[in-house]
Amino acid sequence: MPKILFVMTGADAWTLADGTKHPTGFWGEEAAAPYEAFTGAGYEVVVATPGGVVPTLDRGSLAPEFNGGQEGSDRVAAVLASMDELRHPIALEDVRPDDYAAVFYPGGHGPMEDLAVDAASGRLLAGALASGRPLAVVCHGPAAFLAATDEDGKNVFAGYRVTAFSNAEETQAGFADRAKWLLESRLVEAGLDVGVGEPWVPNVVVDRNLVTGQNPASAAPLAAAVLKALGD
Image (cartoon, rainbow, N blue to C red):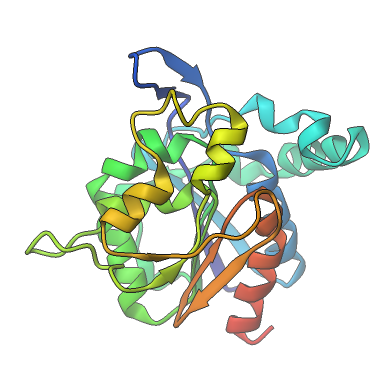
């Protein structure tokens, strides 16, 4: 059975500009929706995190208002509860990229804390991009792009068209004036061609083998784009 790698944050808190820690982790829908799509299409999912730590769910991501109501929240929670892979991650440092048909990074604020500065993740991203196989990243997941630089310090994603959680969305979420840095701005500074749509509306951008989604609502459409790229 072909496999898809989920690279997930190992962080359970996000350090804000004033030094306080905001509880976080991965965003439920961004893992659950692609998991359902990929496993439903016959793929095995393998989860990897820095050091192989069990990823932490951002409990706020299960709030009914973020899932279209209680029924949607319960559905996401049920999918996550069924994901045994979440409880048995492998160490990101031990990943063999050639073992996977595609690589996927879900978001949540967690990647802003750890994957943005994780050298092993940066190497994996660079290799996945160069492989030509689908590489998919959603919401705050593109923070991991910041660690993917070449020997001259240039970001390997520079010039690629991408989308990511926007400054407008971070403002509406109440964190823009509390964060050390904003994802959209930092990606632009790194040389990426960032295009964002309306806040909270699904938006997926495909550039060569790179597929990016703007926000939680983009997770399911992003997964569909990956399956299309895989020929499923």
